[in-house]
Amino acid sequence: MASDATPRDRSPAAAATCRNCGAHAPGHYCGNCGQETRLALPTFAAFMREAAGRYVSLDGRLWRTLVALLARPGFLTLEYLRGRRRHYIRPGRLFLVLYLTLFAVIGLVQSPAKLSDEVVFVDSAAVAQDAARHAEEATTAQAPAVEDRALPFVDVDKDLNVTLRVGSDVVPLPPSVRKRWDQFRKLSKEEKAERIYSGVLRYGPYAMVALLPAFALLLKLAYLGRGRPYPQRPQRYAEHLVYSAHLHAFAALMLLVLVVVPFPVVRAPVGLWVVYYAMRARHVVYGGRWWAGLLRALVVGFIYLVLLSLAMAALVLASAMLR
Image (tube, rainbow, N blue to C red):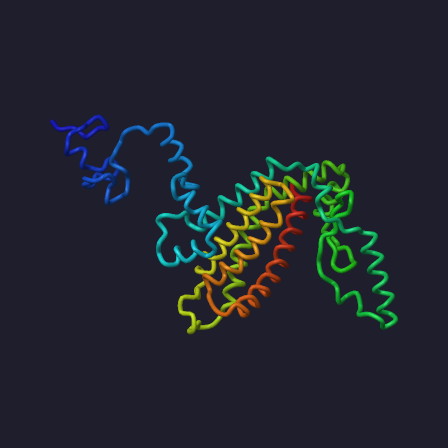
């Protein structure tokens, strides 16, 4: 009586049958479910490639993608939109992997002790004095009222006390939130730095994931229209999202370079390359006149910087209140 084929069955009939779905599979992969037909156990190197490949594709695609991302502005976006995707890591995966790597490397090579030396402080006393001066000028009709400058911002003093302000006024907090806020302010400066540092590393990737679709939406609004003079220009939101993912991935790669190679001589070349890369990538993908593209880039960049500042403020607030 014939028995079911087992992994030890080496008959031609068994070799041509997929072990997963039972379909006829004469090649290296099943045409029905996609499983490989070669059932030999993997070597250690093959095992690790299979484990990591789901995330970063540790083969030629990884290095081919990174080289193109670093040296060829806009190339990966055009390749993806034209359907040539097999040889490169997909933009969403590339974006996630690079930002997770960035925050992991920052956590390894940076120290919370450096936070108090690197953060840009806002002096509460100076803010209060500035507000009083503007109020006095407003009463004498020499300057506009303080309310005209009523924008929200996070005040971090030299002791790492965090305060949310709107203009010169401290934002009142609900009692439940105020309790955690007071607990944070009672910590030592070193403990506050550790709390903020670990919180930014923990929630930073989530902030970038939230900012990515916002940046794509800004591009969609900036390039509204039928685009008849430039038929190849991205029009759909998903196309702007692909470009945004590649541009953000490039930014993460450049930040990784600055973190791993923290020498002042590196900063100027990297900064110049970032500026050139951003403008060149926009022109390659979107085309059009350079002055019109520059104007759109300035508008999108300004709004995005505001959103980025709000995201950073939210990170600091979340880090202070959440454990």
